[in-house]
Image (cartoon, rainbow, N blue to C red; front, side, top):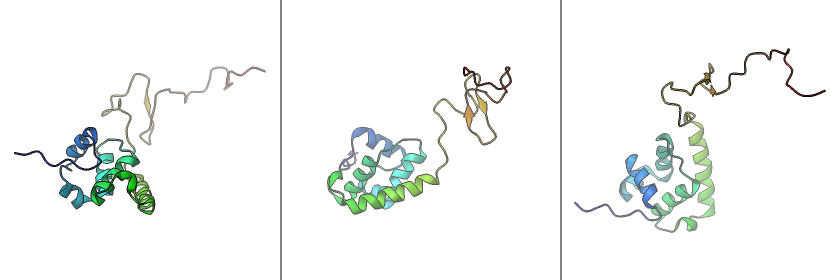
Length: 131
């Protein structure tokens, strides 16, 4: 079986990430669109750059990513920001199913604070500053 054609503007690392989210060919990218492919990468835990978003759009337009028109880049940025705002907040890499480092405290909102400083200081709340 022949390997799928290389996507224009997409290097080996980005191509591997795209394959992991099901984007293997130009037809796959066309079916999704550049923005949805970008969002799929974010949902999967990757941290794609705006340059990758432009590269995906350039692959669809069959042009170098730097030749994507400025107006289209602005549209993509606004749409990517809006789509990213709906994604759940990413957990730190060390956080996997409740295995927080020693001393970490999980707040009711799911945030993890590695320093439990909810307790008042023994000296009556002084911040340790001098006179």
